Image (cartoon, rainbow, N blue to C red):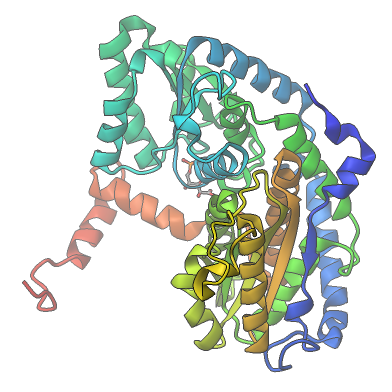
Length: 480
Ligand code: PA5
């Protein structure tokens, strides 16, 4: 296997970079931009945020910061992936939220578009992958209609082991597997859950499912680099060593408290400063189709981690900036008008790629004298998408809209490992700066409990009563 990432020069050339020039008041109006003084003012707070976070990491509290060091688990995952490739054609993730979005992001970033359409040879024996992360009956039935269950393995991923959506889908596929393969059904199910707690852990032992553990100190939305994301990546031949090497490189780069040389800390500080300037929407806009689902993954990470009613002392604060996804160049024809001329409530994070993995030239087709076509002839799609990114950046800046870019030399496992880990750390630092607990999700838990109650789970009777009273269907505010 090509291990070019071991080469120091290659690693240096693959370092992702944060360019925040267009967030600064030297580029945009000082009402909307950040000044050097603002950053200097925040240095002390940044140092404290860094110290507190890294102390928690060193005490073993924040497992996501150690995931780049899991040599034994990695061997296990690679071994399992190789065995699964021999036995199955399809790999289905049954999970939702943090137990699915990272898998989806890794697959779209690191496998070719339309990956499942490729032949087995073209996939180099990699399994086809599916992520039905919803309980829409049409979605699950649709999947069951197109896959051969005798050739399919399901990975049921749930940290808590009790999420209604995941368990419902699990019960359905368990039943369908029993019909399709009889007593062998348990060989088609893998469980990825808490190492000790939860219903699914118990069931894994009882029904003899192969299992993986989500480390106790790693929360769902911070789990992409744990077995949660790594196994589905490995079954498609993503280089998981390289992925974790990228995360390790970013860990190292962010190990110092100096805000000006720690990209994750700076990115968090900028969002904190912009929030004080009423920028309460953060748009992540990749200019690369492969990174579209990373923006989706980040949307959950940022929203669930920072959208909080109370701060860490219990004071009511209703904190949080709203993450929004957009995709360049597609959303230039959908969202950009609003970003450039609408309210001054947004900042934009571009994800830009310096070198695409494919080069598609626009042919010279004899239209050089045609105004609408001539300028495109002989150019390339890479040049066009990069130019469009620059043009959007320019238009935003000219209109005093703060924007920055994370520059990715090329999309590969090493750069994606850096990017995912940087965004996780950025979110954790932002939690420190906003003084909210970035690692809980009481709002989500409320929704989960309400679902249990309405679906008749034992122990939720009084909540059900409360909910049914609150949902009076004879409301006069319904038009029919
Ligand atoms: O980040 C989180 O904790 C949540 O988004 C969870 O991932 C999501 O609710 C699914 O939970 P679980 O993995 O316990 O099924």
